[in-house]
Image (cartoon, rainbow, N blue to C red; front, side, top):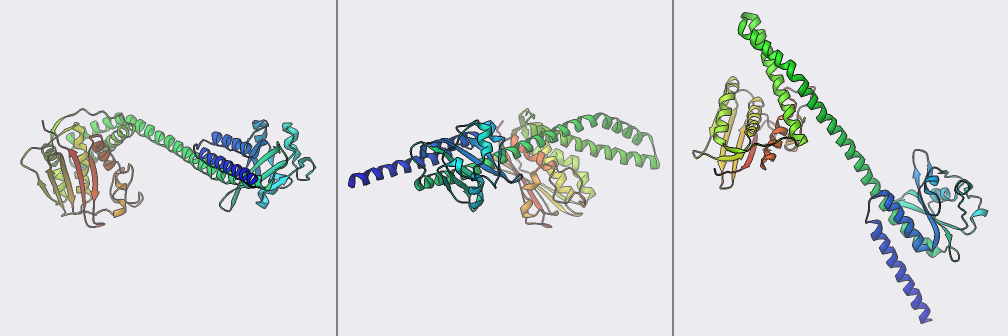
Length: 414
């Protein structure tokens, strides 16, 4: 009696160990094909049967289809739909309950189409539903027990395998859907990048001609015609700026930007930019303060780094109402330089502080916005700063309370 008990205990331990191994095996891959093969092998190993099959439910066609099978031509099986009515697998699926059939050919629910098309003869069958939560997603079947009949103990074992398999299949499906979504995004991103490259290239030549004629008309005409020429010239300059933004963004996005580094003085960069755009600030009656250290501070950078501060300062002017205040302050530690551009402008909602750096993103709706631009300036600024291994971020207490943009760069000692 004790010896019999000992044998049963040993068999139980062996079975539990096999189920643990199966669980580890199923969780070792998210590749659908490999996963299904592992499930089939696990079923044969645990139940000492001739073959196994996995059928999953197709919600669109409302039938079961063979996702994988052993012991028969898998490709042939995949082309055979199994109806929910008139099949043993369909009964298992509909009733959400295991089924054991000891003499399959005599069972009225036996779906003979599969046997006729594959030539594989099923003598005995054990099938259990595959569930995720309360939802049945398919059926797993064990076919032709090699020694004796399928038992209730076999049912319990296959049910455990089915539960593990259902979770593994669900995870594999999620990963596959994510892969497909990422591939679609990659294609869309490439299309967008190609479009930006083509547009910016093709518009350069006609824009150059327009700028040339606008410059000529502005200089050679007087009165109303001169004013019209001035308007045309400013519009052409605006378009050129947009094209430059598109080109710069595309270069950053595709990783084609190469840096040509040299020692640059941060104070000189800021002063030069201020001299260029001070008229914009004066036209809007802004108070513009520069707080610069007396000691020159250097960075090892590409000349295009100035575009970062051009974008930030122009944004501060544009998004600050008349009679506003703008302050540029530079400070440094022994390792880093911090440039802060603070304004008393329209401010930024807290949930937009990170999104404003996304390319083409604008806080205002495109149909009702008051401020021009493609929404590329800050994306270009972030890309350029990150190429220099720096950091850029925005701070604001909210709408109407101004904004502060900060750029942190590695300090360089020439």
